[in-house]
Image (cartoon, rainbow, N blue to C red; front, side):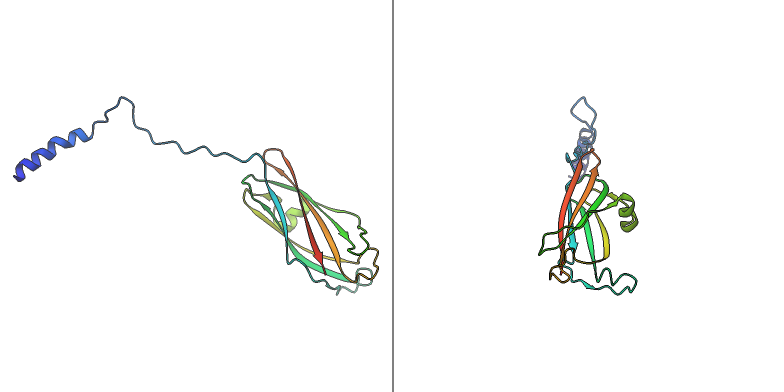
Length: 170
């Protein structure tokens, strides 16, 4: 009985090697990688709101009595990388509605503060911001200001993305 089983197995093994079709077997190709049509960029702040502190620098404290520090996080969420071209900041007095002059920080400043201005797909850049200020048109607002931020990114498909954020300084 064992002998018949062994002979039967030997007869079946060569058949298993036959393909049954004329085309060679090739591995399946991986699915194509499709990039999104444009980057999606968000900007957020930590902490938010920020509690201002007295400016401890005697060289500037009489002109700019308050200071703040926060981290700005720039995040790409669609899966298409790009470069941060610049960001702007404008300080608003929350009582009077007066705005300061808009300040622009270029790609070189982004790279100096974040290590690079390149924003990877699904990546983040973090920039620590420390500044001294006086509320513009101060009319009893104390140290409160609102900072309006716009971050501009040029993605790898040539699109320009402007992402806006607001942070409150108390």
